[in-house]
Amino acid sequence: MALEVLRAVRERDAYANLVLPGLLRERRIEGRDAALATELTYGACRSQGLLDAVIERCAGRPIAEIDGPLLDVLRLGVYQLLRTRIGAHAAVDTSVGLARAEFGAGRSGFVNAVLRKASQRSAQEWVAELAPEDPVGRLAFEHAHPLWIAQAFADALGARAGELADLLAADDERPVVHLVARPGEITAEELALVTGGEEGRWSPYAVHLDGGDPAQLEPVREGMAAVQDEGSQLVALALTRAPLHGPDGGRWLDLCAGPGGKAALLGALAAIDGFVVDAVEPAEHRADLVRKSTADLPVRVRVADGRDSGLTPGYDRILVDAPCTGLGALRRRPEARWRREPGDVRDLVRLQRELLAAAWSLLRPGGVVVYSTCSPHLSETVSVVADFTRRHEAEQLDTRELLPGVTDIGDGPAAQLWPHRHGTDAMFLAALRKPN
Image (cartoon, rainbow, N blue to C red; front, side, top):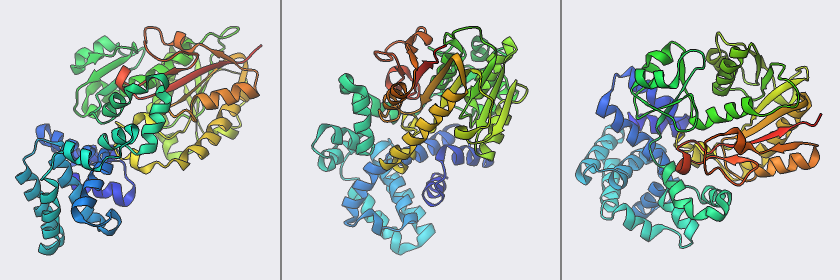
């Protein structure tokens, strides 16, 4: 099953965290077998850079010269050798068996030779032999991150760049499942009792689970709870807590709503006060996800480009959870770090600036925009906000005051969450108020 998912990721640009759970359910694989399939799949996706370097050295040829299906088998085998407690003999034997079944005896011999060479050194020994000498490059190699991403993290950490190893290690850990208790339906305390989870540290609606399939939980099936990272919950909550000039007229907008998690939390909170949320999403299939997430809530979904939504200005609160590189959620999307390129940032920054400007034109005087990204990259975060405040008469609020009790989120006025500090995705958020 792990091999099947790796192939889907390589051939179809599929997302492992979407393909694997469906296969586990379809084939009724549970318990320790499901845990092993998950570990092998996500681990091999996350560790691709390290695995490929070892495979190249042991095969004596560039990765580009190895057939893709064979490379999937090799990655799976080397991952078991270097990053799991599976015995070397078992890892080699099962990988050779996969190769023989798929390609015949000739290629299985190649797999056998490569894996036997790989098994002669530990992961630490391979790192010592193959890693670059510079400190950031070495940490990037050891924790299987592209160098440019590790450098972006170090830049964002700034004076605390010494935490880079902890941050990269947190990206490689199996993430805890975060649930959100829907306000007005169930409390976090009740949800924790029903699911056997623990209440979150920062959001009053968060519950953490060690594992399992959350889609099978009764509160999730009944719409009283959903899967949502605690950091994403805090972004939505910050928007509702931001102080306005003048009364809240109850017109809220989620300008980049897909797939609908933040829109659902905003809708549940809006329902308590009789407010309404408009949710904009340009892609029809993602708009459908928003509709499903916000069913029975006062949320109106509009399929449109947020830069030209056609909406009537005058909103009190607007969330711009902008499309971004997603570098803050690499632990939940194991293959994403190897798909992104440094050049992606430039085009995304242009889009982020345009969306923020569009939101500003829809905001009433005295209203608040919260700009957020699931990325700590400085070009997507503080640079976008700094550029915007230079061009517009915007009052930047101290976002830290909108996250009561949350510690260690930066020097302000914006806030940055981190996996290694907060156990959340690396969400960035800034709050901007329009002068009267």
